[in-house]
Image: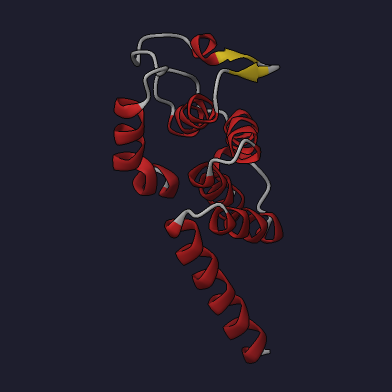
Length: 134
């Protein structure tokens, strides 16, 4: 099981339960909208989570990031946090990019996502410790 699946397992179940637009696990990803857009930030985030966890769709890190980025740009802080984890951990074949991860955690925090704020502070602390050790 990937690190991301462990981190978002319970979160994604709660999100999918609460998401009124989320189809059952058997429904296809097209229920959320097509590649040009999804119905809401919440549905884009839910679809992104499904693509990274493989819940009802084939695992695809690039599609996960696409939908999480879209939800993040719509103001959904938890989606910014999810995108950051994908870039930090190189999930689903996405190239590892700590700068993007920090950017997304920062955006999550600015949008009021407390988990994103905590992750941003933790990442900055680790970065400072790494710089001190050089």
